[in-house]
Image (cartoon, rainbow, N blue to C red; front, side, top):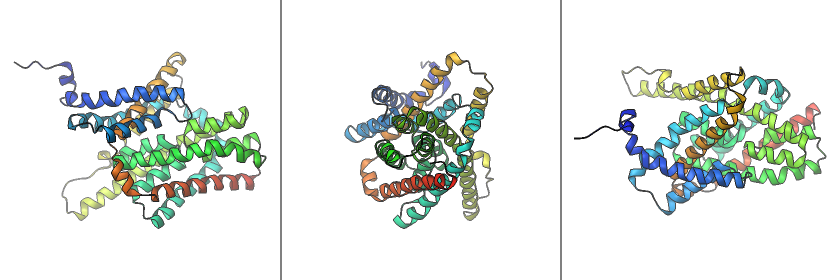
Length: 346
């Protein structure tokens, strides 16, 4: 006689997901420790690299697949919601208002460059969006946020994150040197780093390498920029919904299509979490623990994405996505400097 376990009662697929989730979590824990040891690279990048390595060196069998897929989708959404508890939208809006003009220009430049250069290079739409959004807003976190909306192949997500990381690393090494050569002010460099470098850890590293004041300002600018993933995600969701509705009509489907079927509800819960944080309902004593949980969840999710990535398919994509990432990154960095030059904030 079969006796149902607690996990069966929670979800009938719980057992089938266990192996993949345990693998992603174990690798994620290693990646978290490596990220603490080498914060310049960070746990998420270590996670996706470990995932790719295990996937392509050891090829986990089919019993791991359900849990890996669950980690790359549902756990990814949970991580974004958890991040909301550590982000006060009101505080960021107040302290980052001076950077909005530069941020608006650099974001517009990133999207335009990704579209034009991507078409010229022949990069397909979803990879263009991933690289464009990752460069425009906040690197791997932005890519993680829009992945459940546009639903790209996992190897595209891994490729985009790897491409973004490559130019983050270059920026950390190059930006402080260029800033001193151009005799930029602390606030000018902080604004440049905050609007032109993608990942938060890389912004912090470059900013504080330049000066403490530059690091403080760069961090505030980066947080302001990160909040823009919310309207961008909602716009993408509406565009995807409209495309799906047209597809239903062309296919002659009699079924009703609604925005609710594709709306990224996790973004709404992210807003709820941010509102709770903003009104002071999250005790200060537990905020570090919530941040640690969010960090670990996103590492596990990106590790799962790495475990789904096929290096052969990534290699078949060739150099074009890397060239796209380079072109968009240069366009963003230059446009940020030009706007600061015009407004006299260098």
